[in-house]
Image (cartoon, rainbow, N blue to C red; front, top):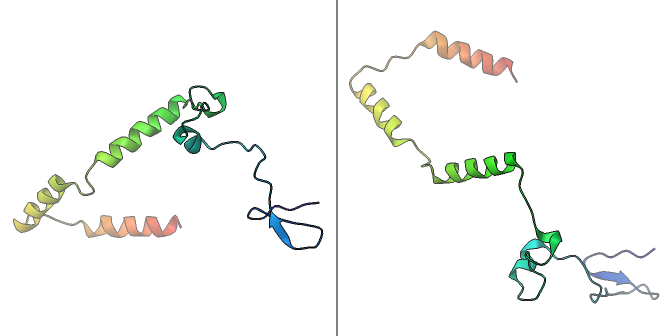
Length: 106
């Protein structure tokens, strides 16, 4: 039995030797797309990928999330105004109940 670890295989003397890199190995999609040879995504059927409708939807969500600002500045400004005007009231019982519910869900 021969083991190939990091491109090295043991020879009969027990010393590592370089593995045979002349063997044809499957290309990754990225390397195939970067190559200028004939094996591109258009000609190699193994490199064509089609997303399911859920996958396409997830991709759209990811794009929207990446475009959204990290902080909703309108919401921050709204609550700042409430606090400055003394109009922001905290329902301590509601906060305490939510903390207990979160603790119980762990």
